Image 1 (cartoon, rainbow, N blue to C red):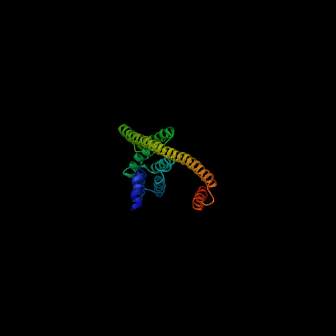
Image 2 (cartoon, rainbow, N blue to C red; image 1 turned 60 degrees about the horizontal axis):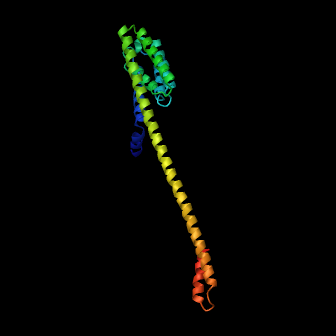
Image 3 (cartoon, rainbow, N blue to C red; image 1 turned 90 degrees about the vertical axis):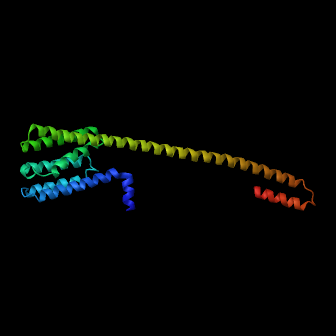
Length: 227
């Protein structure tokens, strides 16, 4: 539980993405498998699309396109088998969001075009109205834009956090370097002072009379300690 709380605090976006992807993958496969009109190949392609869904966080560009290919194959085999399914519609709305989070804008836009084409293709097979064409394009455009805006905001916050972390490292490095400089200067001052003390103690010791044994012993101890 502690590990889960830590992951939620540091990377809740990734956990939410995986949660949604797993739910959609299960929903897609189960709904297709229990559909009486679905064929074996459609179920197989639904399974392939469900597996690809699980990788949409780490392979933000390739995985959604694999899902698109699987859904296109499902629809091409028999459009009537998926006409009343809800999972495929939810997946088609979720994938543009994933593509919007891709860090290369050109590929993100290209992915949106692919899904818009898939929506048009599906509506054509279903003999849908112009309004259906329009609204599916709007919904996918909105989800793509949402993912695009949120990912750029997240990236901006991450860059700000990185700069703050770098500034903190530089500050700590400057503090360490300053401490080392002070330590070197203090060492030089102390070493010089002790050297002078040792030399002076030796000079005074040589000036003592023969009967000043205690004074001589004390000065020798000072010299020894200084050296």
